[in-house]
Image (tube, rainbow, N blue to C red; front, side):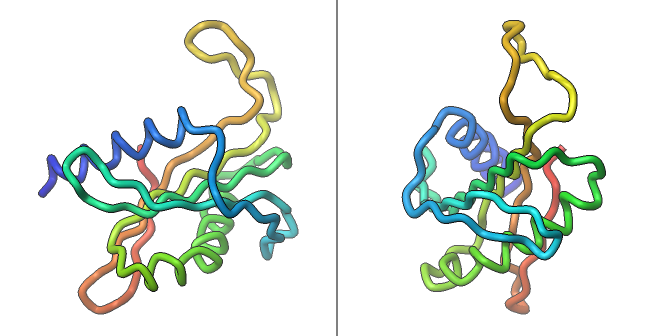
Length: 134
């Protein structure tokens, strides 16, 4: 189970970093007042598992990790219904924002956005747990 989960996370991360266009994009305003674009889609991993992928992008810079975590909970509130209708038990949430200072990738190119990755897992009691992927 753990190796399958790691494979799902790795596959999801590759999808999120390499895929520039998602279906169903819309602009939302979070409780924090930040606006951003949210998009989502279902992906099937190499092992045949189906995961829900949510991508949120905001042009507002982020200063505190606690703010990101609150925003991710708001984003999940918007996206959760679609995951539940599809009876999905796992999701990846990518939160991307403009860096305050320039950030360079491994090739020395300046990145427009940086991001954090979170997982959402449906527990047996019907509640979702959301955790940051380190």
